Image 1 (cartoon, rainbow, N blue to C red):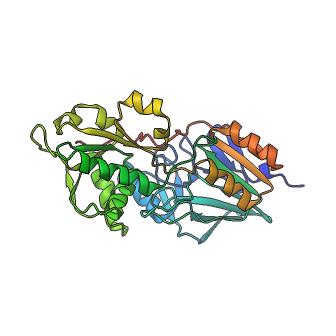
Image 2 (tube, one colour; image 1 turned 180 degrees about the vertical axis):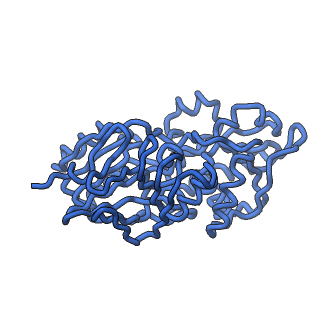
Image 3 (cartoon, rainbow, N blue to C red; image 1 turned 45 degrees about the vertical axis):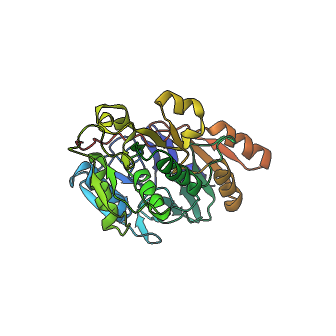
Length: 343
């Protein structure tokens, strides 16, 4: 009798598929990898062959260079690739541009690796699509009941209100270079902000990639070559690390904002010196996680990289069979390990 572990099993290098002889989001170089999305803790350079969405492959090439792998295989959403008799289908995950769940099928068994995902609307990527499966392998970044994220539009409205309240001050928003920054820009545009948005150099190449993929970011200008006390009343976006260094000192009495699900925890905002915390996450919150388990009704839920205990307890109370994989090498939220561009 086949076991689920015959199709996918945790290893030190990541989730491994023995019959297909490939890994999903491996944390070290392997011969063959399926990559769910372009964040640095899931998409590493040096694999022999990589299967991913076309957008994820483009992101990896932009970040690591065209030779990030010896062989690329781009797959569209809903398209099926087969390797050693194992079918691999990629479905939208709603996390960032090109992000995918990997649905892996073999001998009548279906296991879905979620990668990172969220269920709410994001104007910069395709929404999550549930895939019926025997086993759903879920992230648990915000896997505690305290993490119930507010409406994105309300958070952007707070930023726009601050801009009206303090027109003499620059508003410096820390946002991860891939996904979060572009989402903040699009949400600002939808909120009515049509003035140029100034960006750190680390964002420029990924912004152009998003534009090439059809995401209209509006007028964007580089936040470089500025005189002291510059950009009062304007929005400036940079990676979180840049908001703590000399780059941030050139702006006019900046209001420091940070867009992250962790801004729900006031102590984290204080530790970073954040004046305007914006609770904007590209990960599913507690309700999105548990609603997904309820909707899919898989035979088993496997929980990985995050707060596993809370979800394990929820599954126990609901009669849902679950286990924790305790994989290592994945960040809690997407602090980028990829090298930043000069500012």
